[in-house]
Amino acid sequence: MKVVESAFENAGFIGGPAVQNFEEAFARYCDTSYCVGVGDGTKALTLAFKACGVEPGDLIVTVPHTFIATVEAISHAGASARFVDIDEQTCTMDPTLLRQYLEQECDFDATTRRLTERQSGRRVSAVVPVHLYGHPADMDPILELAERFGLIVIEDSCQAHGAEYFSQRQGKWLKCGSMGHAAAFSFYPGKNLGACGEGGAVTTNDESVARKIRMLRDHGQAKKYYHDVEGYNGRLDAIQAGFLSVKLPHMPAWTEQRREAARVYGELFADTNPEAVRLPYVAPWAKPVFHLYVVRVADRESLMQALGQVGIGTAIHYPIPLHLQKAYADLGIGEGSFPVTERVARQIVSLPMFPGLRPDQQERVVQHTLGHVLQQA
Image 1 (cartoon, helix red, strand yellow):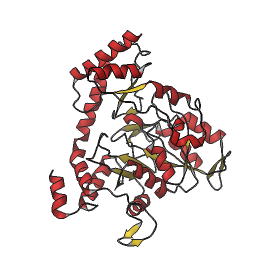
Image 2: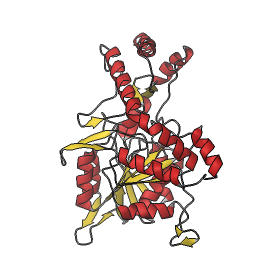
Image 3: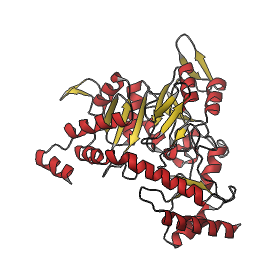
Image 4: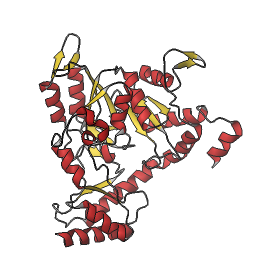
């Protein structure tokens, strides 16, 4: 409330010290040189594409198992999406399938370092790994492919605040949001770090990218009323930035509570047949932050109904793969094109997960889940 009072006292509602202070603190949290606050996570992706060199007509490779904002931002940047399927265990981009697409469906000119999709003749300029549910994508092979083919890497870190990836290439743990050319974060209220409204940020280690995004978010202004480029209205509100600054110091403790809750779920489900309830996989190179706790069951609709009847909330993230959404019907991608994504999308259900979730509450969730699943079997 002090944040709100301060904003009303000085009438500093847009930009200013509150935004700058949060940007500096979040850059430190992500182990990056720069952070630029923007209006939301979708805008963060869009501006990252524009600032890093994506051009209208380009193709950007990502996954069909993500929130639609990932691909909306690609479209907003004037580009088009190309999908590769996900890894069955992590539900993030499968680097092997990415390599197959780049090697088998594209041509690379080593002189110009331009990658062209053979069928369409269009330039492939970027790849967007999505750190889904708070679990990192396998970044080393993705970054190696990007370097080989001259691709921009934009991390979709909108669900991965504080998640870490162990890079064999660098021999150390790296924060999500610090590995690509730039990364996008969302501060939607339901995120691990959530504002009291909309908010987002771009992190990067490239000063020129940060400078371009600062201009793009503010109508392309180098200074007030001097527009070097045509930009966007994509600024972060001071109240949201102040709110995030208050919450940010609590993130390490909240993250550990989420990880502990995931550990407790693992113990409670330990003796369960994995074919009945498939638990989230944690790769040996990952320190996830469990934005969501997503299990897989054969009949998730009946499970959700049964849990709802006893007051246990559930959700689906996400029920319809992007290539099968009406919004992307023009892509002409039919069912069966991405079998792992389609299989996962039919089975996933998100169980309660939040800081402060008590073991006795988890016992109740697991008891009712197993009771229903075993009854159905």
